[in-house]
Length: 327
Image (cartoon, rainbow, N blue to C red; front, side):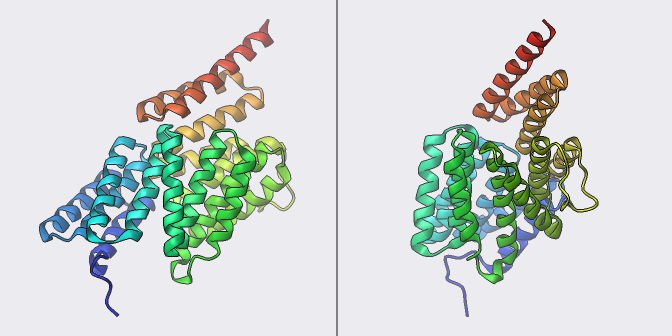
């Protein structure tokens, strides 16, 4: 059975995915991955194949997004949407809209991000594309969590988890990855809702999946959540794997290394931020203040204004509390 003409050609798509997979696994440096992807883009342009061009632009946007090069990612996603719309491929155009929403979320433009998430969700629902619905719900939940609405975030993450179970078996890898990411995020939300036992249960489930797939992005997300959960619990539960460290710092360190492996600078900065909050909670205020300063510098450089403001505010609070303690 042949694919519709508005789909990327299978052989070309496989080559694109191979580049992305090699970069995500840490076996291909970012610069080399970008060079290879740009070469594929030029090849698609020379052939005049709009779906192939759109596929390259979408993946370039994803790669730049992980690096938090947000203006670049937005440009790539806009081009991808335009190319897929011109090719008559609505499903892939919706995926570009979804990724645009995520880039705007990271920039702190939450109104625009929510509009795009909702548009992507409704479009994917109309087409019956479950994985896109799952990602749209997950991304909007992360935004709600960052805005201080944990109950709403919890409801959306639970919805995303349920949707993930409907991702077809031929995309099992994506089903597992999304389930893992939703569980790790839910663990953080449960902490905000003062439910550490539920947070641990969800984090442990995510950890088991992350160990199964062994991808840096999921490993980083899970270990960051573990650092936060163990900070709240102050002990390692009896059902923890034998090799798991009870020290939050170990998990934050592992998370940082995983994100650094794929040069995900935004995630590195977020890990610094939550690690600093953990250190402050455990009485290591000066170390926390220095780490918040580092996170703030990276957020500012990457254009992540909302995260930079939060880091600055947290740093001032930590310093103020330290000064009061001394006095």
